[in-house]
Amino acid sequence: MALIIPLGQTAHLPKWQQPKVLLIVMACAMPIAFAVWSALLNNFVIEVGKFDGSDNGWLHTVREIPGFLAIGVIALIMFIREQTLGLVSLMLLGVATAITAWFPSMGGILTITMLSSIGFHYYETVNQSLQLQWLTKDEAPRVLGALLAVGSAATLFAYGAIVITWRTFDLSYNFVYLVSGGITAVMAVAAFFLYPQFESPNPQIKKFILRKRYWLYYALQFMAGARRQIFIVFAGFMMVERFGFDVHEITTLYLINLVINIVAAPFIGRAVGRFGERNALIIEYIGLIAVFSAYGGIYVFGWGVVLASVLYVIDHIFFAMALALKTYFQKIADPQDIAPTAAVAFTINHIAAVFLPAALGYLWLVSPTAVFAFATMMAFGSFVLALFIPRNPHKGNETIFVARGLAQRA
Image (cartoon, rainbow, N blue to C red):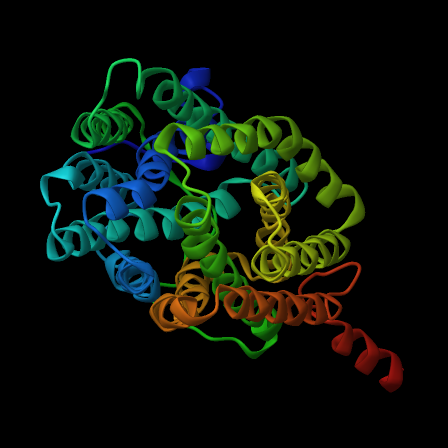
């Protein structure tokens, strides 16, 4: 039976066994499988699976179904500790990624994608919960920025290996998927056996909850999920379909994103801590409005590959600022609500993700510009919602309307 240690009693453990180090290990392990899978995906489904835009939309709809069902985490943590569930999910992600190329038909790709997606989404749900439970409110923005940088560094290593070796050694999709997924699975197994179980000081509610005072957080999660899916599904697909990017070329573009994130993410975390979640999210959404509008302009005005590549990089920088949404919730939440609300929020985040990729996949066949115009509207909606965040959010001051109501009553 695993050793259970309360968070407040971990000082005696070796530094490498501290809770924050486990968060770092998981932050390294996940991207090695998931980021490599993502980097090869567009080329794999076009070259091997012979997918068109509609097929690609259905693939991502299937991929997001487990995210929509992330609420099932609440049922699982009644029987399994969160830390255990997170590591088991990470193992599943690694194993499913490793065998992806064994199933090159559309049915096979959809099936293995579903399995890897279960691992990814359940891991992400639990990981977000553990981060907010194990980190104090003061250190959370800084540490979350550092974890984002660590994940980017791990992904940078994986992408760098692809860029250097893909053509040099004429690598196959099967070999790259086996190695990347295998590394993630081995790291998850090692973390399972080498780390004790850490006990949060605030026992989590293990049932479904929806609180009225979290409504703004729910709304922001919904908009973020819809907006991000459009980018994930269609921005990379555009680079391959319109501009003919090869595996090593699109991976090079990812590498540029990662180098920037490694440098920028810690500064973004500190900026969120200093200037607040409201300002960070407003800046993010204004930037995304401009980026998605410019994506549409590529098809309207025939702008070239250089601008498309620059926009892709800028897009990633703005998405890094989304950590402000996590710390906003941490500030307004009851401590015991973090785990169930993380599951609920992940489900809300994926409501649009289940139907949007397939629906917009058909629209893409008619007008890619219309797809990016829709994304621009979603970013604008997020911007409006961000204006409702108070400058000093906390329990009892979740939105600007609460503060105004209190002022009127006073």
